Length: 87
Image 1 (tube, rainbow, N blue to C red):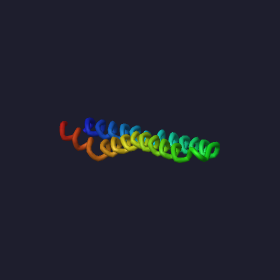
Image 2 (tube, rainbow, N blue to C red):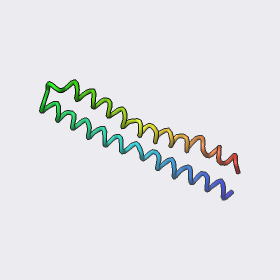
Image 3 (spheres, one colour):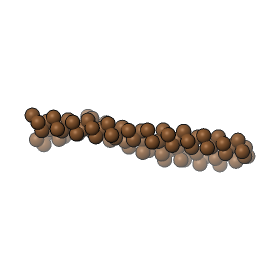
Image 4 (cartoon, rainbow, N blue to C red):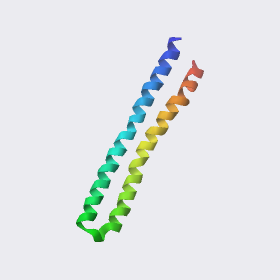
């Protein structure tokens, strides 16, 4: 009984920590968008280059949030059954 509680506790704590990974990309994307607006405001003729670089950077930073989200979901729904099956 104690083993089951420890497995569930570990999965809950791990999934909570993994889902915190969504905060970083949100802050980074907001910062990048603000800097892109500043760059376009200073040099409107460079809008195309700034936009393409911004979209590439946002897409790359979003993957870290998605990895954290998927890891959290796996820890919530898959890992408890897997670990409890080993006990």
